[in-house]
Amino acid sequence: MNDLLDIVNVRATNDYKLFLEFENGERRVFDMLPYMDRKPYVCLKGSPFFKVAYVDYGTVCWPGNIDIAPETLYDLSQPLNS
Image 1 (spheres, rainbow, N blue to C red):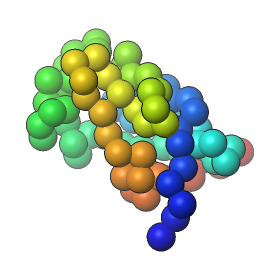
Image 2: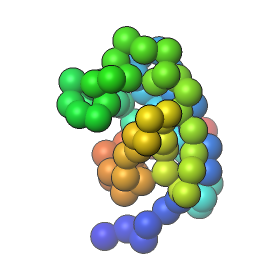
Image 3: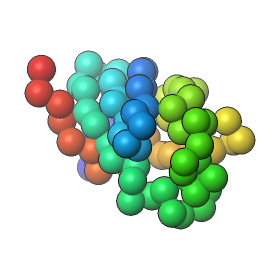
């Protein structure tokens, strides 16, 4: 099991991908599309608010008190090639 890594930067795209930078310098991409029909993320689907993703307390958040666990983001994301 990995030590919990904080996210320090996020960029959300129109196709529901999150480009993430972790505190150890790793850059990874997480596909949110499979989650977009589930609560609480369904309210972000088709909304400009998805792209307003921001980092707070080491994880990705959206307006409306929506977030996703950083360990989920790390464990299920793909490394980006430098």
